Length: 252
Image (cartoon, rainbow, N blue to C red; front, side, top):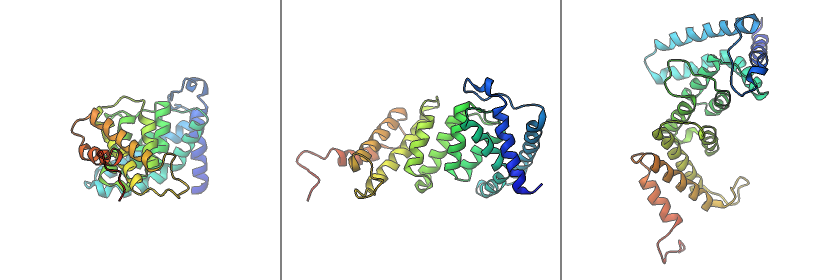
């Protein structure tokens, strides 16, 4: 079977894994992967490949060295994951460790758009992470992306962080994890305000002031959740911009 034909087959089978369980999934939760039939056989085959990949990665001590390899390995599972996401778009899903692992890998190799697409599916249907992960899917998604972006802000756009906040806002997680995301979001809003171009087609309603207020709200909430999150200087700086001292208009 050619690689193109195989990818098409994997995508179709992954979609069937969800669609075959429409009644059980009607409550919005992923149900067990089929244990017999073509879908089950394909899942077991890909799962075996994933386990081999994980063993190979465990031999690499450098985290930095592992991540490009994860990106390459993830291509083996792309068609399967795409099929699962397609089934999810139709309202059905199965418990799928391959899908969950690919969300985590996408975070690791810094394809946050892919991670968010998979994460939306995982959260919507309650897909479980592999047992070795102690955090919930929402906490892992929020905290890992936020930690990466706080270290390297260029890794994610404001739009991606807003999407991440929206996806995870209704889920329980430690206050420190939520505060990290709010800190990253606040800094993205502040950077957008700094770079604001009123002539741009994408300029938000409310202009620069709206961005500054959004940043300030995010920082203040982060501080409420975790007193040592490290946003006090950010808040002080933005308060001077948003609420200038009496007699100071901000004009020359």
